[in-house]
Amino acid sequence: MPAAVGVDATPDAIGDALAWAWEHRERLNDMTNPHGYLYRIAVNVGRRRRKVPDLPAVEPATMPEVEPALVPALQALSPMQRQVVWLVQACEWTYAEAATALDISAVAVGAHLTRGMTRLRTTMIGEAGHG
View: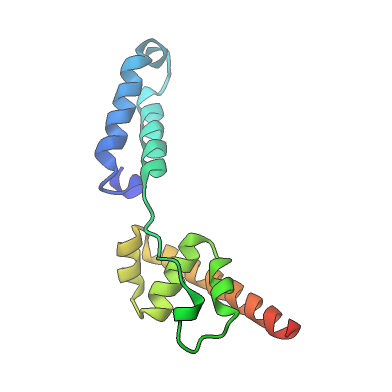
C-alpha cells in the first residue's frame, strides 16, 4: 500500500480502514471480498490525505528578464505539471529527483513534463500570435 498512498499516509489510511471495518462489521461480514473492500478504503483515504507540495506563488515583478506571458502560462498548468516543469526545466533536477520530491514515479514525471511543456508551447505561441 505505501506505493499507492505514500509512506507517510499509510498508517493513517490503514487506521481509517480498520475504524470503518469496526463501525460497519455487520456489513463487512456479508461481503464476498472484505479484504479488497478495506484495501480500497485505505487507498482512497490515503490519496485524499496525500499532500502534493506546491511551489510558492511567483511575483512577475521579481522575475528577471522573463517573457511576460510565461508566468500566466505556468499558472495555467495543473499544479503537478507546473511543479514538474519547474523542478526539471528551471531547477535542472533529474526525473528521479523530481519523482522522489513529488512522491510519484519517474515515468509520471516524464508524462507531466511532456504535457506541461506541450501546453506551455501552445499557450506561448498563441500569446505571441496575439501580440
